[in-house]
Image (cartoon, rainbow, N blue to C red; front, side):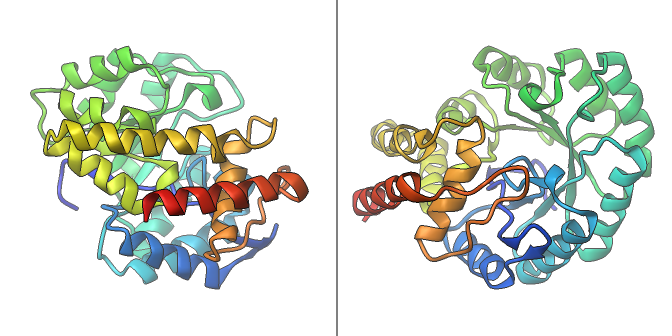
Amino acid sequence: MKLPLKGIIPPVVTPLIDYNTLDIKGIYNLVEHLLKGGVHGLFILGTTGEAPSLSYKLRKELIKLTCDLVNHRIPVLVGITDTSFESSLEVAEYSALAGADAVVVAPPYYIPITQSEMIDYLQNLIPRSPLPVLLYNIPGYTKLHLEISTVIAAKNLGVIGIKDSSGDMFYLFSLIDEFKDSPEFSIITGTELFIPETILQGGHGAIAGGANMFPGLFVDFYEASVNRDFEKISLLRKKVLMLYKTIYKVGNSSSRFTKGINCALSVMGICNDYVAYPLSKFVGEERRQIEKYVTEIEKMLS
């Protein structure tokens, strides 16, 4: 895998038939849809992929199937964040055997930890990981907002970059500034609307959930930013904003982003929209809204 990691890397949803069965056809369709859209990598078993809700059996099946389908055409990153240290390593080791290119690690969730405890955790994890490690800052889910000093310590331990899903642009810019003299260290945003700012300031890409549905839109958004085509950036930002105003706003639950993407992919005929317990998929009026929005966005993008 060439460093720094760059481009649009979708946090891939996990197509399911039920809580204990992968949607094999849907995974195949989704991977080919993403590859056809020109994405630069895939991130499986992340937040959008509902990793904490899946059994280890399903996680391993998904890793193997995805790596086989991609067949080294683009990098595959695997989320290994877990409450159990040994379980994280188990998934990392399986990922290496399956042919993945890197693993992604956020602070262990549930029990709150300190910055120094996170550094100690990485001091033990990184030397034992068989694959390069990308750090993942998502304080809304882990209770820990990684300080810049913690990220510096992680880089010194061998971490190859960070995905920032804090939504804090000042923090994102601070990361870019801190590591501007480390050309192989990737700064990747998890906030889709920040793609131009990330690239123009010297960052490297985005792990963008909306790219599950419309990969070409996000690849174009990234490339316009790389090329400093401000007119095109402005046009594409309006199209990305449509997702925020439509698909991402359906329903009242805090999980509506994940449920909306899954439902939209189902409407598009790509994969099933079952979501893992304890979530439940959109039905009735919510699904009808997604159907309407998908039709509108597809017309806008055509």
